[in-house]
Structure formats: C-alpha cells, structure tokens
Amino acid sequence: MAWVGVTTWVVLDLVIALLGKFGIEGGLGLKYVVAAVIMVVQLLLAPSRVLRHPLVR
Image (cartoon, rainbow, N blue to C red; front, top):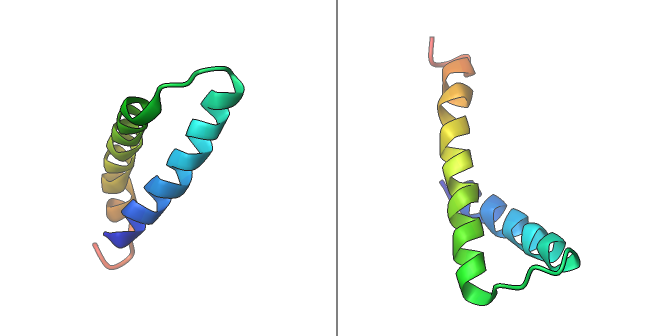
C-alpha cells in the first residue's frame, strides 16, 4: 500500500499548485481536504483494478 502514499503525495502537490494558480489558498486545511478526496477516489478505483487482475480468477 506504499504506492497509495506516494501517488497521493505527488498528486496532492500538483493539485495544490493548480489551485494556487486559480487563486485558491487554504493552507493546511486545504491540503487535508484535497488529500482525503484523492484517497477516496483511489479507494473507489482499487476494487475495479483488483477484479481485473489475472491472478484473481
């Protein structure tokens, strides 16, 4: 599950930078909200990836 942390961190930095370009500054609270949304999306995508894995059948 380490890949979840790494990809969350990279995407988090990219999203925070993009939001900054649009003038949205929120500090630490914004980072927590964005990180939570990213992790929820990852968890929603995970079951579809597992079910398509060739070893699951």
